[in-house]
Length: 113
Image (tube, rainbow, N blue to C red; front, side):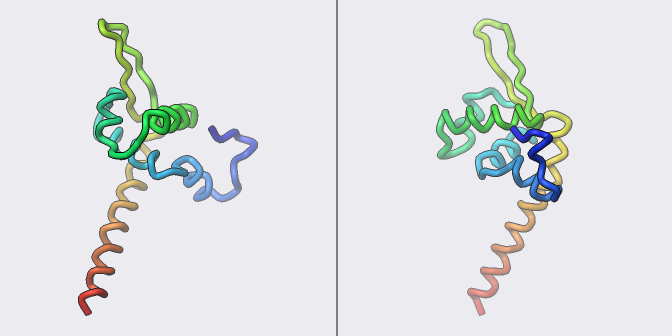
């Protein structure tokens, strides 16, 4: 969790600190689609461990990007979704995706020359 007193002067660095791991980007990308239960989220992100997923979800929740909703049904379950602030990351994630596609396309074009 980033504390107000620790916020960097640069807004770009602030945003990067919020998504400082590849796993957070994968989590936000999934949650932008719809709310997910913990186990289905874990299954959808290949290679992520239970500890890493839990730690990253807690961090994203502490930073106000993800919300955790507990259902008291039988059996009880938890669902994760983006907060309104977390939804603000959608254009950033889309831009990263588009840049990745552009970069790969350019590298392929250079390889074929």
